[in-house]
Every structure is written in C-alpha cells, then in structure tokens.
Image 1 (tube, rainbow, N blue to C red):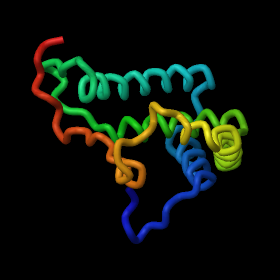
Image 2 (tube, rainbow, N blue to C red):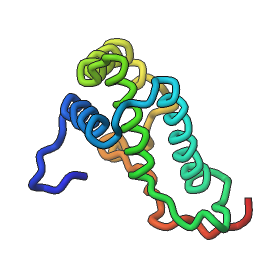
Image 3 (tube, one colour):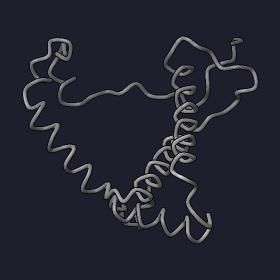
Image 4 (cartoon, rainbow, N blue to C red):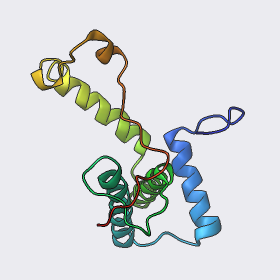
Length: 141
C-alpha cells in the first residue's frame, strides 16, 4: 500500500509511471513475446507460493522466504507493460469489463447454490484465508 501522504495512483497514472520507468531506467520495452514469457514466469512464481501455502505441496529446504505482494506487483508490472506496448487503456478496459460482467452476471452468482453462504455475515464480510507471514516448515518436495 502507498504511504498515507501519497495519493493512490489511477490505472492510467500507473501506466504512465511504468512507461516513464521503462524509458528512464529500463531503456526500452522488451518485445511483446518476451514480456509474455516473463508474465508466465512471474505467474509460475505466484503459483509456487500458493501451491505451498494453500495447496498440498510443502516448501523445499532452500525456499526460506517468499514475498507475495512483490510477486503480485511483478505480474501487474508486466501486464501494464504489455498494455502500454499494445496501446490498451487499462482504465477503460477494466471499466468496460466490469460493466460487461455486471450485465452478464447480475443474477447468476446470487442464484448459484455453490456460492450460498451458511450465514449472513459471510455474505457481508468475506473472510479470505490469510497467507502465513512465514513459509510452512520445509518437508521435502
């Protein structure tokens, strides 16, 4: 999260910030195909964290630490790069996508028995499973 004194970035501002960073620090964008491969690599790193934190796998002995927020930020950064490279206004795209989902799914999820909560509090305040602050103790592969 940003510091309280810093205003939150809009998605358009994020795209501009990433573009400025690429031009000032990164020299130039990698090719779209390279960035797509990098995105897959970063998603794989996120999947490793989830498989070991929430799934059935355990951490290996040499996997002493991980940083979920950093991995999510890596993924977002590459997605923003791809959007910038292909001329996609992510702000407009997300707004249009949410509108589409709202029209399409206005009643679908409410009527899905698989999503029915057992009590009203669960509907009002979703309680996501917290990621442990430290990895589980390594137990082999």
